[in-house]
Amino acid sequence: MAGIGPAPFAATLLTELGADVIRVDKPATVGTQPDWLTRGRPSVALDLKNPDEHAGLLDLIDAAHVFIEGYRPGVTERLGLGPDALLARNPALVYGRMTGWGQEGPWSRSAGHDINYVAITGALGAIGRAGGPPQVPLNLVGDFGGGALYLVVGILAALHEARGSGRGQVVDCAIVDGVASLSAMMWSMISRKEWGEPRGTNMLDTGRPWYDVYETADGGWFSVGAIEAQFYARLVELLGLPEWADAQNDASRWPQMRAAFATVFASRTRAEWEQVFNGTDACAAPVLSWSEARAHPHLAAREVFVDLGDEVAPAPAPRFSRTPGRVAEMGPAVGSSTLAQVRQAWGLTTAS
Image (tube, rainbow, N blue to C red; front, side):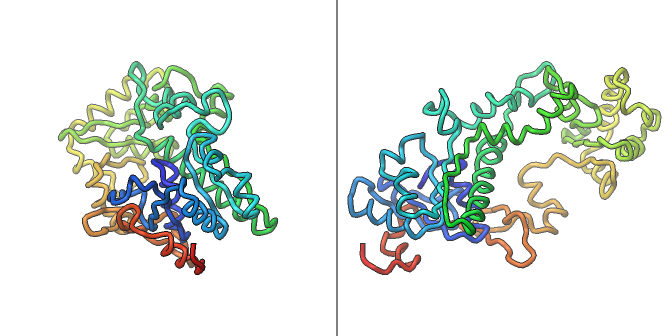
């Protein structure tokens, strides 16, 4: 069922993994040009208040392995498309529900977006420098990390189980649940008193000078992530700072170490530092723009990005040795497929 953000992204990922997906849009959106999250699948516009079109949708669901919806709790039930109704018709159906807050709880029926979901889990409050505001990580952590990816994992697990049991089930995917799960390592560190507040004082949040970003002479930036001792040793060697070789874990010297790193990085351009660190174990890499990332030699060699006419898209991930994924190319305009066409594509040849 058409939506925004994590549910359609999950459908795109499933498409690239080989699934045959049909997107059901509202009639009011017919003719709208597709975006990246609607790629790789036909769109049929159905008026669910029309009994014939509602019945046609139910026929599609009867033939499907998976149903995905991203509405607020209770909406699909009011449409006659709730889990009880659909599982009664198709007992092996995997019913994927994508929400921000979840199906239950005091906020479950409230509106929200990625930034709100990431905020209440503690993740947003942990991202940023000491003394500064929280830094918004685009919508990668909530919508796509804690949302779409967890929905795909849940759907695939439920499909695998259904192969043996013959029974489907509901996959209740809430972004707040997924983000909390993504934060498992931090919660473990908190329990062991290895992660503290305020933000910006820990190993992975720029609290260590050897895990941070530094400005170069030309205004570029370089990332450093030399956590392990051997990588730290290589870092200070290539920076020309041998006097800091034995000081990695001396917290009393970190302010001076950070200043020394900053001074040295500012002495050369980003391109010059790329030459210094290229192919080494110093765990240092340039901070690239979107366009620069596309052209980076390593990503280009792996063909991480593909050209789709005027569009650029990431290649399918992960990669399979025997059954490779497929790039979900831009599809036709919203609602450009008819119910009869999608029925025929699924082998449902009777009229509806």
